[in-house]
Image (cartoon, rainbow over the protein chains, first blue to last red):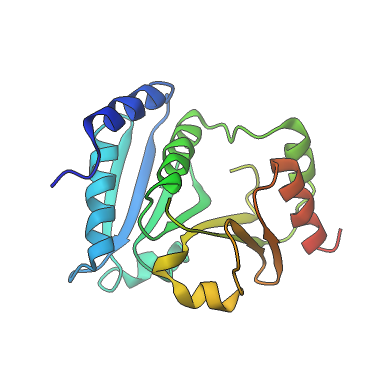
Length: 141
Length: 58
C-alpha cells in the first residue's frame, strides 16, 4: 500500500528538482518489522524513487549492529542522510506530518550541499569546537 | 550540516515515550542540547546556534 499521495509525490518531485548532488538515505529497521519500521521503509522507498540523485540503503538494526554503531543509531526506525559525508542528521520514528516536510527539505539541502542557514547562524556555529548532540522531540500533526 | 561537531536528532515523541519522560517534555518542539539544556518552542536558527554555544559554556 502506497504511503504518499500522488499530489504529495508531485510536490516532492518539484522540491527535488534543485538537487544536483547524490544523497544516500540510510535506514535502520528490523527483520520482524515493527509497524512503524515498515511504514518508514515504504515511505523512504517512495521518496527515493522521486529523484535519480537519491538512493536508499536499508539495514537490519540487529544483523547490521556494527553499521548501526558506526552511525551512532540506538533506536529504530532510524533514517540517516548522507551527502558527500555523514552530516549527523538523524530522524527517529516515522517522518510523518510536519516531520515529513523537514525530511524532504533536509534531503534537498543535503543534495544542494547547502544547509540553508542565515549568515549570522553560520557565524555562531563556526565557534562550535566541541561535540554537540541536539535532540528535537516533536509529535506528528 | 553546518558543523562537523553537531549531531541532530529529530525524534517522534509518541514512538519513544521514555525520552518524553526523560526530558520532561511538556510541549513540542522540545529541543535538548547535550542531554542537559532544554528549549521549548520554535527558535530562529541564530537563536538555536547561540543556545548551543551557551551549552558549551561560551
